[in-house]
Image (cartoon, rainbow, N blue to C red):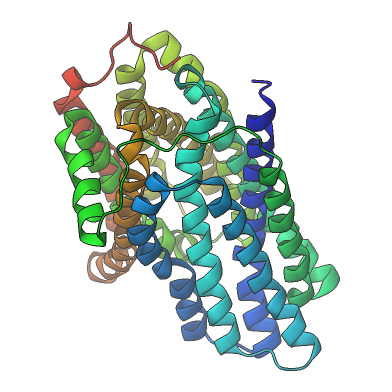
Length: 406
């Protein structure tokens, strides 16, 4: 795909994705190393990074549908850069404190969601519908690369420059992303039917367009199921690997990095599988395979060498399969939904995942306390199966073998 404007957006997506991972790594380190944050402080910092995004998604959907997306993307990048630069400025003046870090986290988290919602629609302005699958695959590829490289870059920058100064380097990535997007020349398509509406009307319409179509509804329910159950990983995976399987932090880092490699492979295979097997079979098969690979997590024995092989297989194959699902699911949504409702539908998706992620993390922690770690982790493969069942029930509404998204 050699389209100049898409290449600029793709490059911006990659830089922004790396910057987001650096922020995710360096911000907690700044809180720990510079201001002596406690575990509760870090938990509140995570909430500040994630929860405001739900509110922004509620507001952003209708705005994105009715206004130009390019200025929103640039503004989101520049606001993130400005907020992050406040941290090294405060550190150099001896005024860095937790309230400032919380404020920065709120701004960065909210702008990241705004960028995601606007980007989901903007890409359809730049790429013909027949090329959306390829474009989404490329986007997931750079996201996987960012997942591999971003935390490592963030950790290296902290080691070399100290955490607050590393965040200044991080801010540069968002400025670079804004400059690249600013170079895009293609005019955006603002649907003629788009008109001003109240927040309640935007929310109602977003839910309506997601729920009225049987295929989109099934995709939504499948994503909700995966999000709820796979959020258990957020609260349990690290504890399980270190305490129950006796892995070292370095070994766990390698295991998690393999998930990025699996995601990169899945992004490359997403279009080929849809072309060969059809969208319906690809979506259902990817969910079943991705879910089945999660069996290896609770089955991993407390022998580090063997446990690592189990977890690496899950990360490589399972994450790869789920990336194949994600690329095709995103493309199908963009193809089936009305052009003037893409922003509100994306906002509905974002709000649902934003609510279900902390809910799943807390539920997973509570279940682990009540019934034990391994029994709780057995819900992961179950989630893949239930998610696939939503699609199997709606299979007649999904594109078949002769209807690839290419």
